[in-house]
Length: 513
Image 1: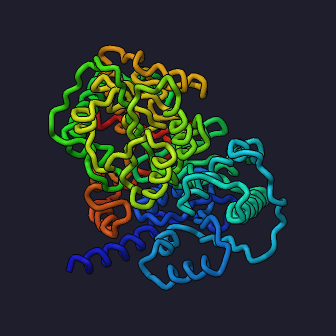
Image 2 (image 1 turned 90 degrees about the vertical axis):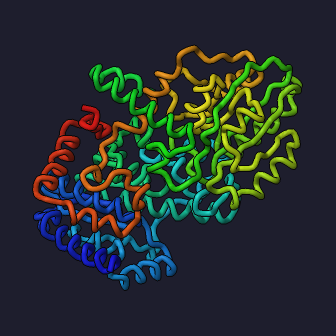
Image 3 (image 1 turned 60 degrees about the horizontal axis):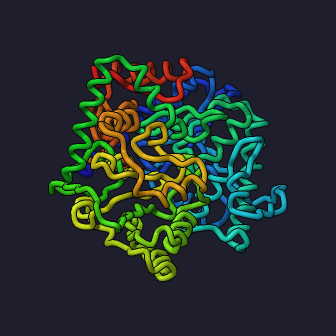
């Protein structure tokens, strides 16, 4: 019965889209390009945003698949066409056209570019805008690799595909009147059309169910303005600031006590990293200094926040491994806590690292931070951009980051500007002290980073990923059950205001009033 209820809601949803969200500009030569996402929740928010842009620019909406190269891709598309409940039919319900960029024809493409180093690849530009990070991260993710071999056939073949897709979309934008582009992510291949659009002076928006950003030539990554977090907070009214601090404190208290906070509610399901046990941090009077390396999933978008001090997570660990043999770290004990999400896939990589650098001790990935602090008595943390950057300073344990990260605008942890400064901080770890009373700044950071974004589903369901998931069929049921003319018009008005006032980020402060 429940399944039938969801199916009925799905077809009602498609009918709603055709009636209220389909553009009335079929004959227009102006185009809104809207990415087809596999996640159902993304289609709902982007349909409204596409409609708003369509009204503003008198444009028709074309939803697109970024690339289709070979027979296998065609089979996958064909399967989607056979499935009446696939996202293809969702996007078709509010789009004037679905675009499939086939590459059977031989396109003019440059010969494979020769890169002298990984940093050379990361600095690759197209029309004066960086695209190397997209190629780098996409290759790692698709092949589940820790790092790139620039001379491998697999990489060269992949690179040739990227040049073809760049050629296709650049030509498309130059020969069509594209008014705006909607993408789901600013990383991996999904971010590529955004970068090409920016290079051609086309407005580009990253639209998700829980956040909305406009990209620019300066800020071409969604999370590239972390340094401005204090500025954003300081602009708020005093009563709003107070409520954000209280809400952040509540959320972080939940996390520290082993419960889910806002951040864990919107993330893919992982076990809590803290428990309800009390944490005791005693002053270290021993000559031994214990370091925790809070590692990351090797293939999971190393450059999601921008540039790192290293080309990728693997090279970061290589650097730290070599540092374990430095005479100045002879009294250090080094532990690695691997990220639990991809641990089973990446276990072999970690095994090779600890064999190569035996002073590195690999912890059980399920170990809690309570045990790391209470039993291991950790004295300092190394990460690239992990959440430990705002967790451990709550217990007066210093954290050193290794690249652009969400905490870059604050001084409750340490953000070296180059490798020389990074190495110096590590070698003098014992002398690093955290300022007193950093809690308020940590709560401020948490609020600006996590709590102030406008969520499309706020009228329909709270904590969407915790309760039903971003890809649940139930999303259509919840939408149809509660949508009315007032909510419909308010969504359009909110998006219209965001587009017109030229803000980079759509912020919702009404929930704090």
